[in-house]
Structures are given as structure tokens and as C-alpha cells.
Image (cartoon, rainbow, N blue to C red; front, side):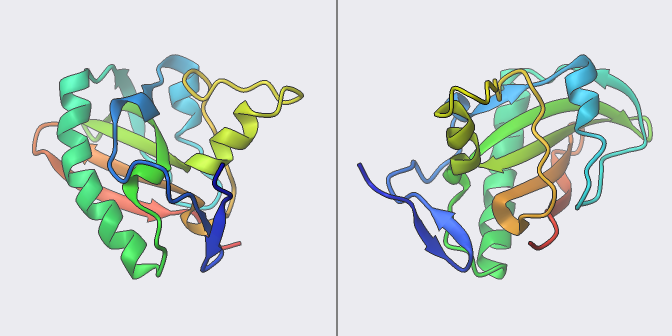
Length: 159
């Protein structure tokens, strides 16, 4: 097995697919989705006045520009990770009267560490993950479902 590498403080797994794929995304709803509105080291989405559930086609539409934005942000941060290095938790929120898809991106190794450790049961597909600080280990972005634009993007605060 390939071991994790580190560059610029961010671990890299070179055998991970470079593109975003449906196998590494999930949609959260209800209380778990609302958990994503309380970020501790990056701007939180909101004010949220309601929820809705994005479908696979809408997520696909978001992931096209997200790939471009994330690639550019990683390059600006000097990180060699790729979009495919992230699991994504999505939620549909109503913000300022608009349908917004919010994504909570988590570096793959963080999720894999939880999955591989039986003493810390965790289901990333149904349980919102919150990490404080960590820089490019996690990110958040908003996508306006009507204009098809990524309207906000932020990595977590630095370590």
C-alpha cells in the first residue's frame, strides 16, 4: 500500500482519483445539515431560513465549477492535493430567499482515519463532520442553484 506523503503541511495520497466522483459525496438533511451552519474556523453559510434536498443532477452541476474553484484555491495555497482528495457533504439551504447548495469538503485521509478506527464509529454519509482549523484539510463553498455560480469558498483557518 502507498503511504501518505506530506507537502506544505498537507498530506497527499497520490493513488486517489484526481476528479470529484459520486462515490465520495453525500447529502445531509435535517439536524445534520444544520450542523454545517456552525463552522468554527471559516465563514458559516447563512443566515439559513429553510432547507431543501438537492438531487444528483444538481450536485453534478455544482461539482463542475467546484472542481475549477477548488483546483485554483489549492494552487494558490501551495497545496498539491487534487479535488478528488476530498469527500463532500452537501446540504440544500435557503439563504436570502435563494436555493443554495453548501458543501463541506473534508480531506480524504481525515475520513479514512475515522473509518479505519473501530473505536471511533463514524458514518461520514450521515453525520456532519466538523474540524476546527486545519487549513486546506477542509473547505466550505456555496453554490447558487439558480445562477449556477459558486458564490463563496473558504478553507478552514490555519493550524
